[in-house]
Length: 214
Image (cartoon, rainbow, N blue to C red):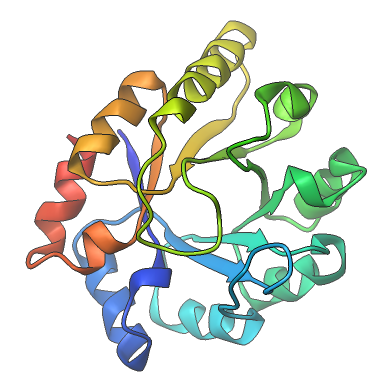
């Protein structure tokens, strides 16, 4: 079963609780929270207090994507706020394995994300200890960007490595995911999809989520 993680980046923040309850009710698997610092990426979004508020309105796992320069400094704030998965960027740390170890020791799952220009080889050695790897199919920073098809081989390469070695690691894809691009990602080997605009702008969000799974 393909896991669907609606990204609240595309939600209406004036009624965020209602929006999250709605996607919870129609069968989403995770809530994806994009944390941006205006430094690592050219946008500023939310902090730990918003994640803490989300925890009050949903029992779905909170998939927190730290698009920030210094995840070592701030990840504990999000863990304490209720994050179930912390995903940080490979490009932001020197000792990713140590950070993964720290996150998992706190009792939650650890994931790593790679920007479009970062090759799989940069994180291959980390796959045995990761719970999730997030492949960005847009340049991180803003929602609503066009899907980059040239990222599909990266997904396929990860799937082969994970399957050949029997690693217990989810491949999640984020960026320009809709009914058409979802099929390409799943065919390439993804088993979790992050989608914002496609879900939150849909007239029928349940139908949108189900279309991504199918």
